[in-house]
Amino acid sequence: MVDLPRLPDDPSKLAREPLREQIRQVLVEGLLSGRWKPGERIVERRIATELKVSQAPVREALRELETLRLIETVPNKGARVRAFGVQDMAEIYPVRAGLELVAAQLAAPRLAEDASRLEHEVEALKRATARGDVSEQIRHSVEFHREVVRAADNSVLLHTWESLGVEVWTALSVRWLNMQLHAKAADHDQITRAFREGDPRVGQMLSDHVLNYVEAALQSHGGTG
Image 1 (cartoon, rainbow, N blue to C red):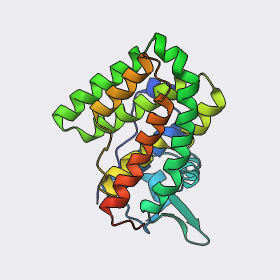
Image 2: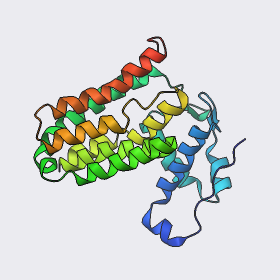
Image 3: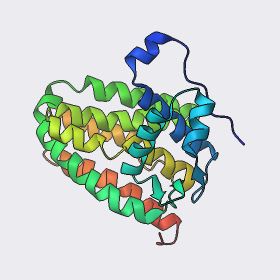
Image 4: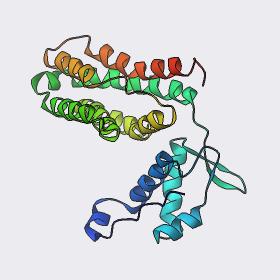
């Protein structure tokens, strides 16, 4: 069994980041590391004891993961990990692609003037790819997309995009479904260039780019969920 990492002892860290969020990250890491497999129970009281916290923030973190459809609550049995497959991606990624299409259209004028944040993520992604660092590839790939959504300057759009749990689903897709990161640094580079040049096709480019994740996963799993 993989031990859960301990919460940081630094009080300033607790002040900067809600306890619930820290616990959620610990639980997600447990999913990624294989501590809990699909169908397996996550015992709220046991987690609270291991992390030396009350059950309330653990319960809140579990509710967030239930909202993301990573776990499900079974009457009289508590929380357990959902069985996750390509079908989940087939439902989530088209929604994400639609949101990013709108984001790109709204963000295009701003990013034509200043695409430096996108360029920063592209360079970081290139370095992570060269090192073969999958965790950093995931982080910078997702942050690239987040920067586009932020540049749209629409709080409703950003909140809705964040609610999809893009980092979590991307990481789980890579680890559980062996999904390759279809969009490497070169693909992000091309999208950044399109923003800089004011290419009117950039929204569709970004949308297609997101949907390619699903296509790649379907192909690698024979089209089944």
